[in-house]
Image (cartoon, rainbow, N blue to C red):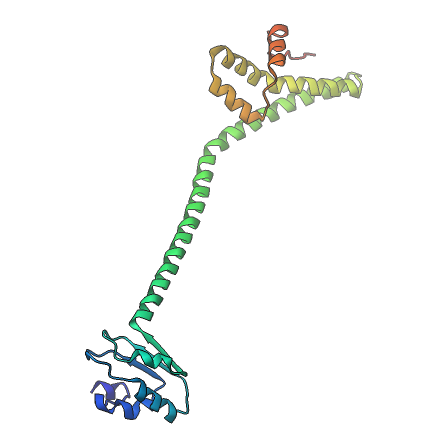
Length: 222
């Protein structure tokens, strides 16, 4: 018999009330149309147990254990309805956890895609840095030569700052001017955002147009 294989004892349904007091946990799931355990039988079992707590789980539909049993102290009765509530609660927790996990995945996916897109700019950034470093090296060397020729440190520094600024800005300035001539507003807007510049007032822009037609910086020469 199954009970013997599991180290248990098999009893007939009418014998339940005699053995009920020995059980700490009762799980009921029969096809009986009527309750098989009433409040009186459970109350008697509690007295025999000296009111030791008892967990009762009723999985039957209709119920095997009378609902009034839940009114007894020291009885913890759970029905299929209670389990369904627990299942729904756990399902909601899993859904919430899944949503949170999806948000984490989306966040790190966006981070990864951003990093992946940034790789496109790495080569451009490196080339721009190398260009600036090469210009700096040339101008610095000329400044040192000025010092060796007896020029004052102030003159060398002034030359260094002025010439380096002109060299760094010459190319971008010329291209921005040409973009203005060609009506490439998107390029101008991108440059404004890239360089973090603020638009000047209309009066300043008008003065710039009337007083300075050549926007290309002049490069100082030795």
